[in-house]
Length: 188
Image (cartoon, rainbow, N blue to C red):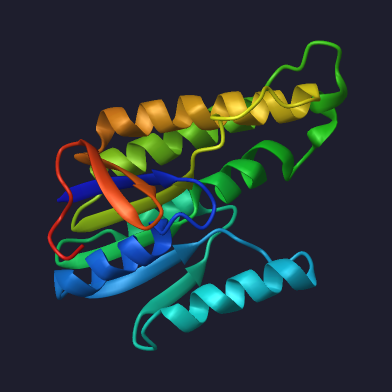
């Protein structure tokens, strides 16, 4: 089992690196996608990613069921790409009832704590090769709005927790990988 967390900004090359690593594994590849086409621009982004992948790879849309999909597909002799955790976080925090964001002192929904723990457990128990892609969004100014600040904070906390259970953590910028923990798997 090898788990790798790939972090970087938008269009940094994270997905391309994950795809190269998956291709180099020589294993059957499954891609678990968390994006949903909510508008034409997002549909175009999804189509772009689909075109980049080999046709024989299996793709599953798992916006709400990522931990269960990881448990189901991360088997010995398999490579699984999760693209991406940031969108999954958005679904987990805001999909059901986002009214908590409007509170004077926002309190995270209990469903988020459950989903987060399920994800961490699934990653820790994964077999085969697991490549997790996520956007690092906490490098800029503090965002306006309590809900946005909570989202940035939770993304950072999630990344820290995942870094603790993953074998490798790779920062990607301008298409170049930098190992922050462990090593860059063969095939970069």
